Length: 289
Image (cartoon, rainbow, N blue to C red; front, side, top):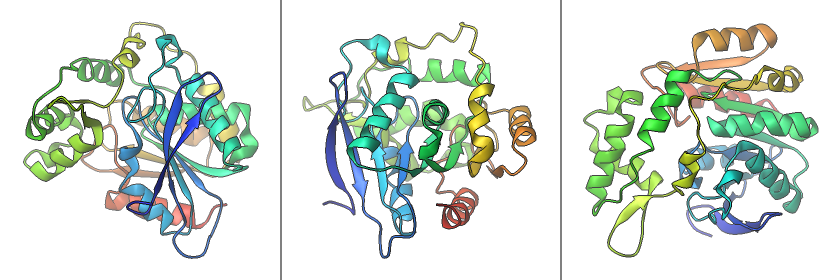
């Protein structure tokens, strides 16, 4: 046990082992566990500030690094770097942990995984929190993600990693422009020491190669249907370029009871520990499952 969690590994059905963290509930258990799902190139560290807060609400919290990220094995077949694969992995992880139902929290790609999982096994959803993602993805945001993560050269200091993190993400966090501690923390969540004196981004570069931003996006709106009967909260970055206000409006039209909170002056994607986001999440989690 370290910092309130224990580290474990889970063997997927087709080979790669996934690293996950298990945060026990703090105090009396007050509901089903929470499963946190990160974005495209992130890993378990993306939730290292949020997960303890959720655990303090009396919830066991499971956070997994998807294949090719963090301490999880890379996939020898890069074409399997797809949300459907990850969704199958997470259903397997829940089965292995004997977790029948959970509250799902998904950032960006993690939200896409949730839509796939709800289409396959809606009974597993006690509730859902979508972080800056919906059934329609703005093309400008996808182009930016592709461009930002295409530069994967290692660096030789954490200061350099922080500078690279700032360069790639300043548009999403403009109010943090001069906050060096924020960017160093950001770097430590997304970079890793390689053992040869260098520091590299903590994901398999082949993940990005699977993105085809020129392809016609699939119609994801049918995947929103299961959430019409699942308690759901949507978090949006106020200056997000991935989740458009028009998409939010349509999500609300199709699900009038959708909870919604917007984090001002933050783009894609909030960490969900911002005061506005956390207040909404704390209230939501307290009243579900």
